[in-house]
Length: 142
Image 1: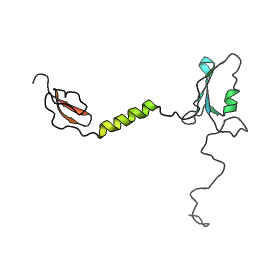
Image 2: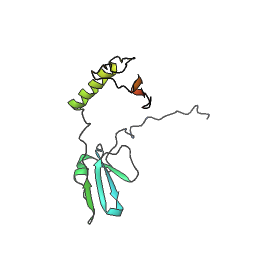
Image 3: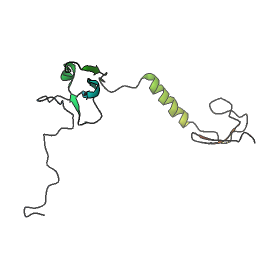
Image 4: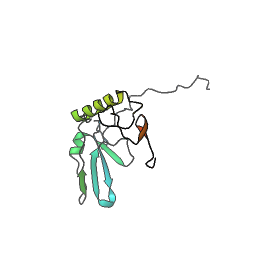
């Protein structure tokens, strides 16, 4: 401890932003794409914003990613950039609802050979017991 008192744990700053910004000089717009150079193939790859910042990749805003040019003799590969988070389709929501309904149904504990399962199908004669999604099967030789 110094004579001036205890040290403060953090200094608030307006210089650091949680949003990733464009790597171009003097551009403060939010990044939407990541540029990576593949030197062995003389290729510049521009794709969706990477999950986290890499030291040898460059984050670009929409304007700079559209105007990107590569050095002479290099190829530019543009991967599809997501315009926003993917929304679940009706089929996805229906499948999820059906899975929840199926999981909420009571399971028959004692299902003998030839018994009818809750789904309307005949029970598997090899099945002895069930716990959740796991089944105990009778040995084929017994």
